[in-house]
Length: 610
Image 1: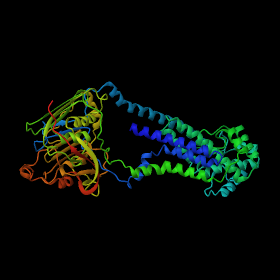
Image 2: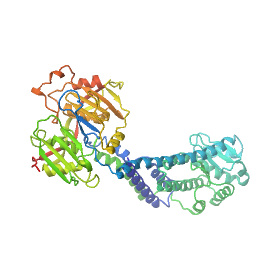
Image 3: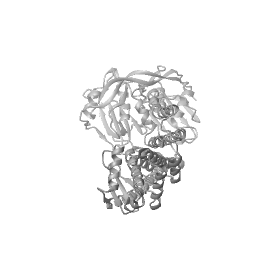
Image 4: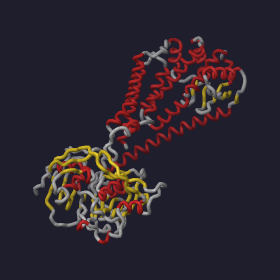
């Protein structure tokens, strides 16, 4: 989350810098153009580039890389039947001896979110108080339905093409002439100013406010207030706000001069007279007449020679900037689409364990285990090389191609020990180095079109099965607490799902507190194909599933093969996994195909004992 926010901030800041360069090129052109550029830079803070990239994703090629591991406990019972109490827990994400620094790093995001929320709430309270004060003044103002000011307003509305009449209210308060409201704007006209201005000057002030309404400046200002509230900590956002107000008022000044053809000196004098009696509006989304740098505005009105026709090269500049900011991310989404559920396979790794021990395991045991050790180490018993590859690269079995015949047959005991986590890399990166060093593993990545299954809802009304329910447990928090104590939670009772984790058995699957993507991953081991989650079910779930294993399904793995190619007698009364999914979970598998990143094993050697 923090990394995504950092990316969004620097990208939006880069767009703001690009906007500044574009406005420099347009400094002698209409202020409305520069205002539009600044407004786009402001709205960019609400639209991450990743959202634009997703627009191109359906067009581009999307590799499917599905992680086969969970961050939480994985219970494996390879003896057949229901999950036993003695099932071995596999916790590849656990790390012993978490340091105080890592605990502090875990708390930091929550602290930052709390500070951000305080800033948002503080700004909202201040702005709401100002809004209520202005709204009270407007409500107390007397509505005008006739008179010279009313007639001038209606005449100007017809001239600029405003069809919905603007409400006019005469106020005795300290507000300057200004427009309040977005959907149904009200022009607040101070009663005591009319005697100070000539008829021509009154028309100029009214024209200025009518122009604000026609341009919907209050709506744009409110949008930037949302940006300021969400990113109050970023100074560029406040700098953008000042640029927007400045160019907004200059654009309205230019429009008044073009609309009325008044003498520039008379218009400037009307603004100065207004400023003698009133201060600037207390809200940026109340468009008044005295906003922005007054001296700069007067100089602009009196001396500016605005180029109304945009030069050809400037049109090209604006087009290029728009293409870079909008078409660029969309094109990126077409040519470089990220994988659906995980990162692409990265083979290289410089991390390593300080010491590794590898020896064959010829016990013939049906139990496998993989447990964390202190300082980021691990100990695995009775595991295959294929299991280690799958663990290190977080793949499904069907994503591992080639390799020697003993890849999922020969079993080993492996121990890796090292310094504290963070000094020599995370555990999965250490796995990769171990495989290359001790097993002489040589691999490469290819993209292949493979048959797969899509996990979808079986019922049109979205009803789930009796054995599938939403989980209310925060497994991430429980996992972090368990790692801090250095003690895993106890295993579940026989036949029950773990509170947070995955239980695998021959013909059984029990899951607790896991997203549907993890459910799809575990199903892939039973059906022998990649399974991708397309249920669109958010959050985490608990489930239990019992079925009859099919000897014709299933890929290479660590569960024992079915004896004599047929299910044991205990499974004959169970439904197939496809029927069980619909009956017990309310889900089903649909056949499909898709491009997949696969890991091709070119060669591997049995390791020599230490």
